[in-house]
Image 1 (tube, rainbow, N blue to C red):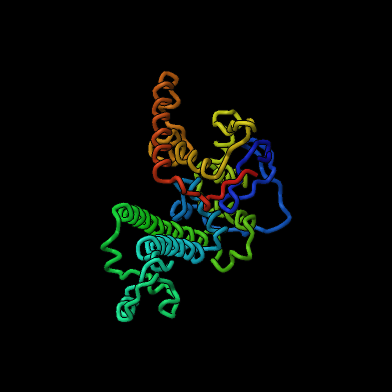
Image 2 (cartoon, rainbow, N blue to C red):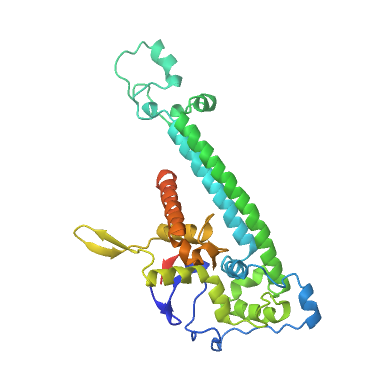
Length: 341
């Protein structure tokens, strides 16, 4: 965990922008950089309110999408990746089911006679032990594969349940891909209209150059209506808001990040899956303490309700732990790039 800008930050790898060491404070302005230039935009002031991108409701999500769109190299690359992930998941489930239910391992390891050999076996009246040299050929995978209809008919209840869960998860991911298709399309439109950047140009543009165009576009389109101009630090704070909240809670020792191990003592424990679960409990999930990922719910601000909301949060954490323990024991959130810098 490194210090940047006077406070600790969690760096999200490719999902989070690099944080420069700017002066802290609400009025701080980042120093000028010598690389990458911005593009000046000009539009009559009366056209601002008619802009499609005027007054964006959720700037945190908006700026995060703009950043991830740059890091993902544009619409086609991001959609291709998500579609291939769907294909990969379906392939893993189907192939695992095939190996588990549709292969006769007794035949494969020469412990049982393949059905295709039985006629020859009975015709020659062979009574001694079976092995792969008896027939003069080796057992192949095709000999051990159970016919599809018989394989499906013999599925065990546990396998059927796992297939149903996997299918439901795949459909959920499919709906999520469709949702991302709509959001990526809108982000691509913003890049083309407001930032004057086509997808093929992204590979040659640094995030700093995109950021300069984003700051210039604010003057024209007024995505944020509370300030006529934004600074780099304003956008970084929006993108890194959740990470900064987590860092603050860790620095104040509100969140436990140490683990006691016998014979070793206390050690720091902050894995990717732990961070993912913390984000889900505190920010993303239904009934989380933070509303819209950044605003603390009103009931948590009332001193007299501290015991009540603490009990609610305790139950929520217990239920989340139970669900994770039952269904996600072997799950690893490898795609979540939340490492400590």
